Length: 207
Image (cartoon, rainbow, N blue to C red; front, side, top):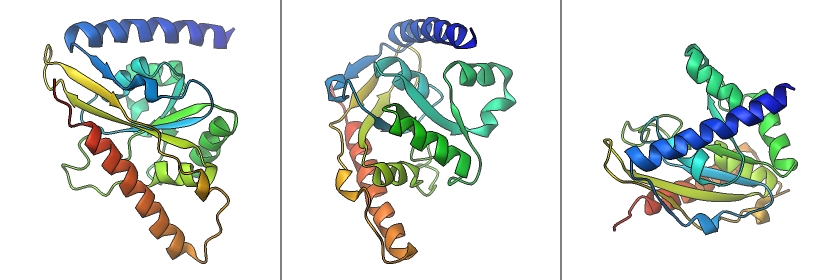
């Protein structure tokens, strides 16, 4: 019964958010055909505002499970939305074992996860180090990464663009053995940079 209620609420909230983004932010979706219709994927976008998760959630046409900071639960409303959308809460330790296990389980079962490599809003602008969580899941599972660049929409009625790029294939990394932790770290940094560069390229949208 609980899952039926959650599923119903999810569709209602998604519908309301879609209308809100379409009317208030004149949302324009680009490249949605790049999102595989079946199989596990990891969706990664830039994080410029509170609007980013809803924008991706309502435009991907796939059920996405977002990874979000545990601070989300401080607000009862956000905690409620987290429950509705089955958000995976992440602790300060980005390699939290529970988070990793839950995310890997979703991907193994053909599901989709979504996260922001910046780790926080406007992380790049703040000079924050880009997190390697997305790269870790991609390398570990071989699941494709779908980059998405969000731009515009700084204020209501200013058009916002949600631009999906072609999937990045890291299947060749699956099962790879590393000589030591330093080699693995460098590999993750390389993949993280590739993902982030793809996202940044997708934010350069012109009418």
